[in-house]
Picture (spheres, rainbow, N blue to C red):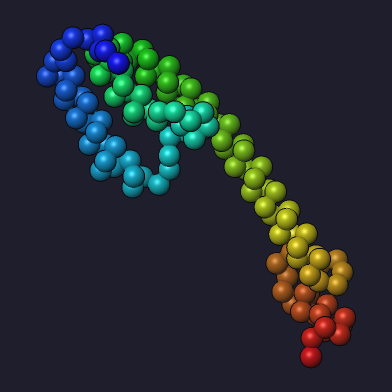
Length: 125
């Protein structure tokens, strides 16, 4: 892939170096991944910024990254809804397993009720 920008300047090299520094020393420890990458695959936002700098230089960086920021926010909102739905499904599966384990209508998380049902059903000695 040939670069559109023939020779990157010192400012461009500095920005690329700062992005690499972030990717290696900060990003792995922040506790979450780029929402855009999680939802759509491909490059993370920092890798996208680095790609823009390497290919086109700093001039188009700000408008393209502002658009990417908006796309990443939208992806984060979608993932948030998906995560909540997955968490609700997980809670529902746990509730059903709990009810299947016990001998009647019980409140999930109520261990006394469950053990009481086991004793009443003759399953525990």
